Amino acid sequence: MTKPTETGSGTKRRTIIAGLAGAAVAAAAVYVIAAPGGNISNAQSCTVELAAAKAAKPFSKGEVAAFLPAQNPLKLDELVFKGANDEPVRMADFANRTVLVNLWATWCAPCRKEMPALNELQVEMGSDDFEVVAINLDRGGPEKPKAFLKEVGATDLTYYHDSSNGILKDLRAKARATGLPTTILVGPSGCEVGTMYGPAEWASNEAKDLITAAMTVQREN
Image (cartoon, rainbow, N blue to C red; front, side):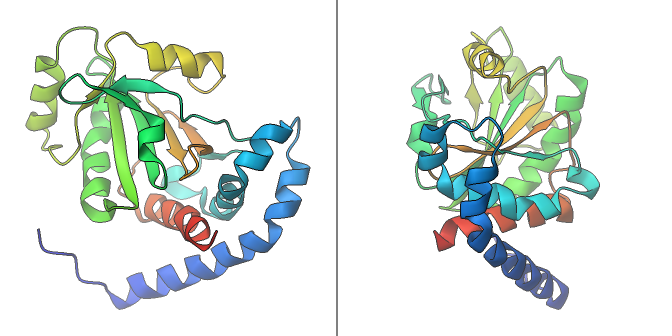
């Protein structure tokens, strides 16, 4: 696949993002202390994600205005779901990468609407450092969700699923998933950077800038 050409405006935008993200590194220690109701263990193990959340906050606007940067990030590395061949997959398997975890189902109209944008985001930003992890929660077999993904051209997304809805139950128990779609940006330590409840235009410049800001801080740490 041909790599998109970097435009002047795109380069300028990324330079601005890097500058703002760098400033967040200096504020990371303060952010850890200021996290309300903070769990000290989580704060210590999720320091990078706390800094990333701080960096992402100014970019929670426009198409991703409802993105909530984590103030007390949850460790999510023990969450389990299944891969394309029904093999168990843990969030810990994505260690040292940033992943955008999206919970969706074919019966969820807002989920269906945002899948093409999630696919576009994967095409544009997918790398050894970043992946869109869209987890289907349909109760039946894989035929229907796979057919839907093919129908809307979302074929660059690896097929992940959990027909038991165990991951949804686990996240609800942690007060992180009230319904579908729910999308969580997870950092390289397996900790939450922030959460979006409801749909978003994930291929928008605002979404890409937010993710880039978070990843910039994570690379520097």
